[in-house]
Amino acid sequence: MSRHGANPLLPGSGLIAILGAGSLGRLWAGYLPAGKVAFIPRHNATVDAGVESLSYRLQRFDGSALSVTVPWLDSSATPPSVLLVTTKAGDTLDALQSTLPDLPPAMPVVLFQNGMGSQQAVAERWPHQPILAASTTEGANRPEPGRTVHAGKGETWVGPLTDNATSLLSAVVQALTASGLRVHPETNIQQRLWDKLVINAGINAFTALLNCRNGDILTHPFYLEYIGTLCTEIAAVLAAEGGQPLAPEAIRRRIETVARSTSENTSSMLSDRQQGRTTEIDFINGYVARRGRVHGIDVSVNQMLTQRVHQLLPHS
Ligand code: NAD
Ligand code: KPL
Image (cartoon, rainbow, N blue to C red; front, side):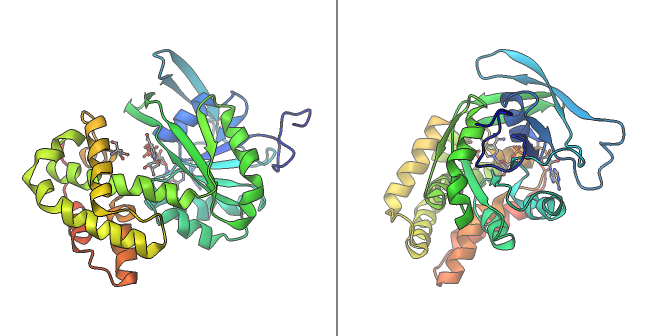
């Protein structure tokens, strides 16, 4: 570390910038050391006209609550060392399109989106920028506008998507570890993203369509009708993509273990539906369906779930 506390392997001053001041962005901003983190304002947003920071209450996992104030990044300030991207998958490409041109080309970008497809699109669009992906089991929500709740204590794995990010991995993990959250380097982040995608593909759409908590899908006739074929489709796509092969029965066991252990949870997709927000279905079952079509695999159940979630109206 230099005398300024910045990691010499990273560009900039040691500041961590966050794009996407939602639940997950506020969670990281609240745990990272004060003075070392800033939010990036939306392109052309009016927030910086007189409002220099964002304040909110963070309820930490241990039950304690604290007031957090995070500055909006001033474009004239020293450039950040790392950028965390915590926008929804469908917003990420546009958000980066208007943000990255103002930031250093050597600055590592860590993508926190659920599902797959958005991370690969970013890595393809900016192959010369060090791009990493994170897979996290931390859980955060915002029950009211000024309050963020750390609802689930988890772990975060970070790994490189572009070749030039490999040498920066340990420095990025070290920077994130300053939060006190558990962060690990992962050299095969694609596999870890697939592992999470498999779970989300078997739970999220069913909960959104059936308007039920995670555990309630397990006995529902609609779930029981389609889960076997869904797992067969996922297994075939996984094998064709060159990931760790998994039998359909093993996929179903993984899905059902998580549905049971999170039985009282409202999934992120049901929560999006309840709040009238766009879901991430295109990056979950929609991604499996797209990759399946590329390989000539029958993915009709993934397609059906994707279409039906698209047809849903907001429901509370
Ligand atoms: P969220 O909707 O609460 O936050 C996203 C934020 O991005 C919003 O504040 C939105 O205004 C902002 N945004 C959208 N477009 C933008 C732009 N162009 N410029 C700047 N900001 C922009 O969502 P979230 O729950 O924080 O989730 C973010 C991502 O992290 C999702 O992909 C989600 O699946 C993933 N994730 C979330 C959690 C969690 O517990 N919340 C856990 C694991 C993964
Ligand atoms: O990741 C999740 C989500 O809701 O997106 C699960 C594992 C289904 C937990 O709710």
